[in-house]
Length: 67
Length: 241
View (tube, rainbow over the protein chains, first blue to last red):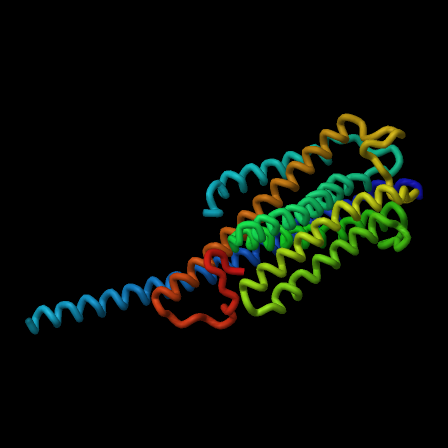
């Protein structure tokens, strides 16, 4: 097949490079969503740990007061 | 652990991709035969080389897993294969676009290079259902490693078979007696290969960092005796798959 003229070849070349970039962007977006989920879970666990810490603290104070 | 040096690697990868694409469009000469369409070569071929090497790397890490019994090697093997499958999708799409532009068809079934890559891609596409069909994490990791080693050994054999097939349609530009790429094209190609390889390594590190963080979160959740969120059944000690 003879070489395509620049304006027609340009569409194919742009298509190939855009596909590559779109795949990378989609991948990065998926990873960003995962990172958000990890951050949310971490915040939730930090809250839980703080809550437990507070409970243990008040329990200790109560025991000291009783003694 | 896996995130160490990720920022630097990401910056180097971005710069490398920018430089490589600048070489493609502003330095490499137009191909006398195919013209501007040949620019797809600088993306398509590095992607396919990196994807195939990634599959072999997945097999090598699977060997390390079976030898040591350390599940972290299985996680690395999984991520290598996962990223190579994604790169494989890009190879198939960019290859089809190039085929349409230079041969007039989106796909040519009697071309060994295309069909063999499709076979390798489909083989690795079965890795996911195969892996996640096994509930027990230990058995899952072991069977997945055996798959990764067997399929990884198939990749170079497949490559050799295709080279021996000597098709007349798919051009051979490396190490042929009829002459290879001119210097400027070879330099551009090598820059693109390095950039795509760096991108693959960066994405492997990103994926491993995310999986490691997810695994550590699960450990923390167990230590705190917190309720496990839905869809978090596949638990690994260090890295969550």
